[in-house]
Length: 392
Image (cartoon, rainbow, N blue to C red):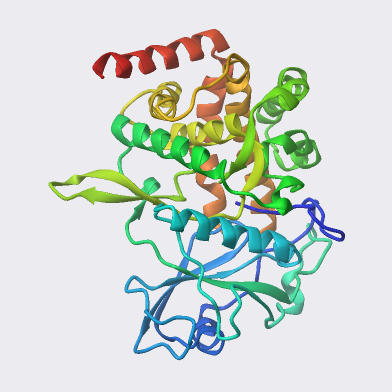
């Protein structure tokens, strides 16, 4: 997701009319990888991305980079950060440090590689876009300088590509709980003050982007959610347990692998995309993964998905009464973020179909979820959780 924030002077939360996604041709990638990382590229494939540009590159032959002594057999993700995150080297360093920390703890996450200059990142000036790139909706031209990184590639499929099952949701919950527990030991000063439009604490900033939602009924529903957030969640945020978190546990970032004994069955195997890491409320992490699980699920009603995820999560970390009380509003707020910012972003980048993933079914799922009484939603989730507990 977009990781736009204001952690240092001159860096602001994304504003309407601002284009931050890099304009990069895939044909330019091999030369960049060779010059910056001393690797020979054999193939380039662009990957889904919201505000960055990501490419899966396969390489061959020995490395000419003294810092890469063993070439990753699965290739690499060549990441070109958006212009806003490029301005914040401390944030990029925090992302690298979190991945290195989790990698050292046995988590299957991408490992940042040093470039030929001995650094995990480098800002590069790239070819500017054509003069006619700007549209009537754009008030600021794209930057020509972008931060570049190289990460080991995680093989497998993304969760979005396989059939969702209760077992997979449970595994996602367990993984999220383990992640939150381990990250209690990760320290980073930069993340303590980070602000981003994609952090749930920034939910009320969505009011600046509501103009992008053209359907009056949809816009009114988002306004209802924002009012509920302001009334029920904002006052209690200081009381909620906080820690370092991934911040974007969605179906595009969770990697799965087939079961060795059953190729039609999948298990969670890894996690990618650390662009939204933050210091925030743990209940937000849970709400995010629940929300994205609801979008494409077919084996159960979307409103039931959260029960299976929470059943796994609770094996690692308990939820307080206060966290239970605000959980529905938190899930709805993530829907509001994804749908509102998706509507806005597609106006700025009409050719990026990835921006429409949530919108395809999200409005219908959100309406059913939001109009279901909170007590009914929580009761159903707890019944599912208890069914797991009875099995053990």
